[in-house]
Length: 256
Ligand SMILES: NC(=O)c1ccc[n+]([C@@H]2O[C@H](COP(=O)([O-])OP(=O)(O)OC[C@H]3O[C@@H](n4cnc5c(N)ncnc54)[C@H](OP(=O)(O)O)[C@@H]3O)[C@@H](O)[C@H]2O)c1
Image (cartoon, rainbow, N blue to C red):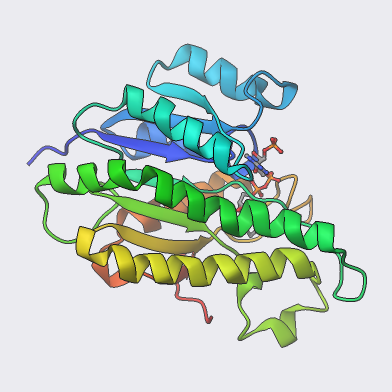
């Protein structure tokens, strides 16, 4: 049976892993109806490559969204809603994040708040605001179970969110505010997964690997192309068994 075209939304889509996702989704998740590429400053220099890509592909709609600002998320949801037809929104990838690298002793309330606002509160507001569109997609799909072609939120987390292995990883990669905010994200997504199960909306977490982006730095183990290729493969194979799970880009479960 032929697949129905899907609508996908990605946050932090102007550079790094988010931009690479926009590029690869066009071919890998075909058929795609629309890709809503969200970024906080669509007219800025850092969104130039995304603008060029969108100019060549009318499937891509660039949407202004500051993931750290609930008002901006609300406005983005209204704008996306005006483009969506009766089929709803099938897949949200909560990718936008900030990382402050300070140690426990050196970190400030401002760094902690900045990381929480963007990495934990932002994804919460995004899931809440776009929930009606996800529900529409789940109902419209006519498919049993859960999948990213039906209705799903994939949240980009990190290996260093894991409390279980923090004693081994902390010294190498301190970044206390980032770790704490991503551990909070993990909890938020598990709670959302339980609550939205009745709507058949899949909620999961993915670690992209250590990737050579602005955030990952030049010493990362893989490039954005390999990370995204692998994450999209994992996402495509997700079912209800993966609801509320934290996986890495190769599909392996990570310890909480
Ligand atoms: N790279 C790695 O090794 C690695 C490892 C583990 C997990 N991750 C996770 O992977 C995801 C992508 O990371 P990356 O490596 O691609 O990072 P990146 O190159 O630093 O890109 C971060 C993206 O997030 C956006 N962003 C930050 N704050 C935002 C806000 N308030 N509103 C909207 N967009 C915002 C940035 O937009 P601006 O251009 O406007 O700043 C940019 O598009 C993140 O969730 C990160 O935690 C990365």
